[in-house]
Structures are given as C-alpha cells and as structure tokens.
Length: 67
Image 1: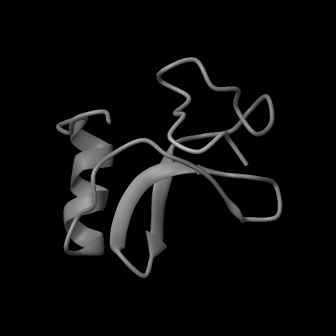
Image 2: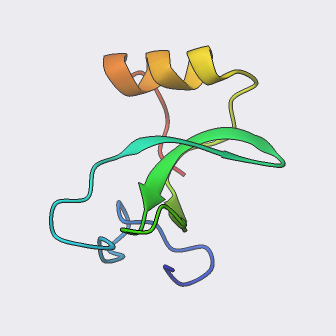
C-alpha cells in the first residue's frame, strides 16, 4: 500500500509495473485508484464519486481532479 496520503500522481510508486488506474470502491464511495495484484487497495487518486457510473465516466473521459 502507498504511504497514507500519497498518490501515484504525486510520486508514489505503482503497485506493479503494468498497473492501470481503475474504478475502486470503499465504504466512503467510488474512486479512481490503483490496486495491487491481489486486488487490494493501493492508492486513491481521485475524490469520491456517488455512483460507479460517475466514476467510470470520469475514468473514460479523463474529466476528474487529482487529489
């Protein structure tokens, strides 16, 4: 897991070389982030979205703010 508060965008390491940004979910909502090879959370790169469709749309369009 990345250091608390650290993002890949701000210099944190990818969990593995070919890791891709994806829609992730937590108790707080949906977000764009990275998971490790086991599917465990690695970093949260975006703010939270209310729905999976909003997060998916942001991922596809690139229309989102990095944290």
